[in-house]
Length: 96
Image (cartoon, rainbow, N blue to C red; front, side, top):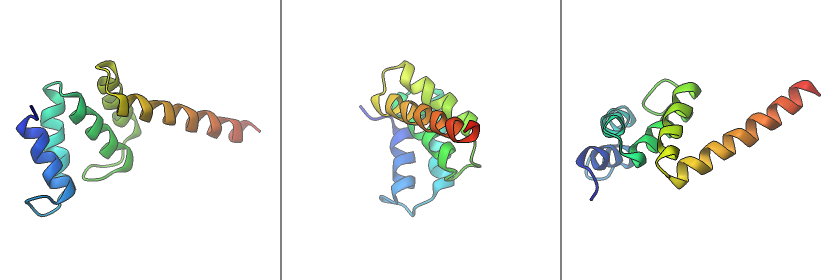
């Protein structure tokens, strides 16, 4: 069952049934994420990473993605793997 807070966040994020509003989406994702819903944690991590509806913050992004990944959220696991690869490539370029 999809929790209503996550559903509202998704509605605001996608403009489904309401006007698209990333700030409200992030607020609802946060409420659901704080209750432990891993999909909301992944979504909140993603909006922090790209700065949609919240100030871009990669530290918070990774924090929320890790919480989701610890619960087995495959999208969060994949996102963290991609970030690890990107950071490795970036460090190689900087040190080269």
